[in-house]
Length: 188
Image (cartoon, rainbow, N blue to C red; front, side, top):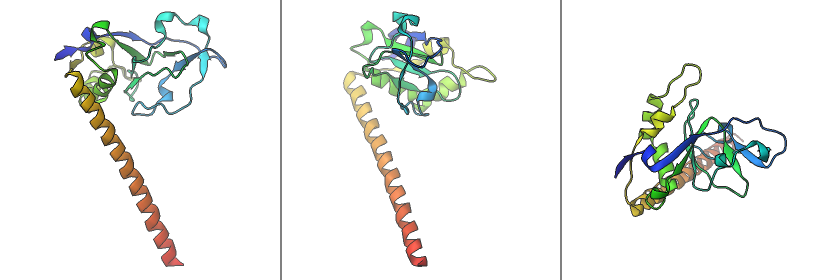
């Protein structure tokens, strides 16, 4: 099935808020993620509960898409027991009820992070000092949605490929250490 994102999901912008030292809600910002959308830092509640509207709180399965700057990525939100909101650097994408049993949030996250999707979105970005992808561009992104079994298979293959890459990097690192140790031993 081919369909635009706006037909399967509700998309809203994140909120602008001023973090405080101690709060009850986590304020997700782009700085919390690496270039692949992987959470790289510990999160602490840094917004006061009374300053945030209920409609902006993230739900399990929401996808946040970094639309500002050069580091564009999609990340799946998983609550980890702390309520959170996304900053204005993100669009929050929530599957419509009619599609929650037809599209896996993990698949949609994968699809948004695919190089062809990223290339298209970046080609539509505007701005000179800080480029951004507009809501209308992401609304009109055309998606291919296969059946659930195919979505699951794609995710398994992707997970295995990522694990393979990680193992290859570890092997290369160990090989380099071994060679360096052999050189040091030869010098002695």
